Length: 158
Length: 143
Image (tube, rainbow over all chains, first blue to last red; front, side, top):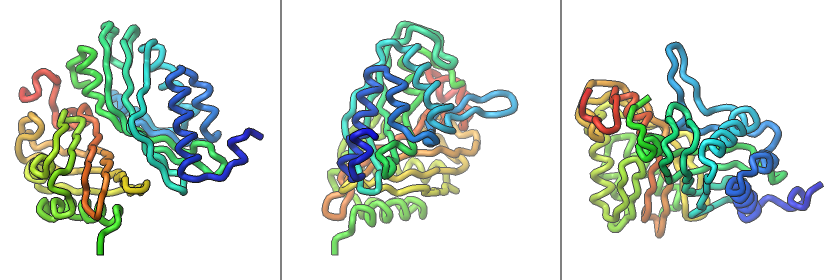
């Protein structure tokens, strides 16, 4: 059993888990990010929606099946990806809200955006639910995807 | 008796759902700091927030606000909700094509002495423009 699993969940300990999550994100440690989540943790990247002819693919599902590939893909497309945490607030029920900037320079395609060598930086709001076992049970994030597209020189509303 | 942070934010959301901008502003501090990331707004003053809310309720007269979660973390309250409505006037640079809008958003509020002193709004403008039939970010007003 790890040290964190033996600690009680408080606003502070939940916020520490989230701080650790972003440290691993900053280090591009996708496995480590996933390890901080419960096996069935929920995942929702609200702005993610890819419109096909017959259906819309959304960024909703589980951390291990949807979140992990998205994180790995983002890091592959933006090899200098960086994360700056501005605020983290939590409560004793395990809710943690974080204001974060994510930035990077595009070297590979990202979605429908061709690699341009351009840099983006976009504010994000993350909402976490940390369980009593100090593992993340859900991740929800909001940001303005149009801001990213425009910074990368992609002006089509896909 | 001073409102709790959650009560203040709930009053704000209830007022917005009723399209009552004055009532929403009644729980907002005069020097509220307002950041609306999709619009690039980062300013202070109640007039800034009033303008954002007024544009929304006037452009979507049948606006519906469906709150899914209100999360209190000390003096910070985060509200997750969906805004739905039918466009009836120009909005965010997009001409009116009478399209239906449904946008999930998150607003993070800081509350002091029962008044909202900071509001940070997050939603995806790509989703908004997609629903309003905008084709390009650099030609938003061209249908």
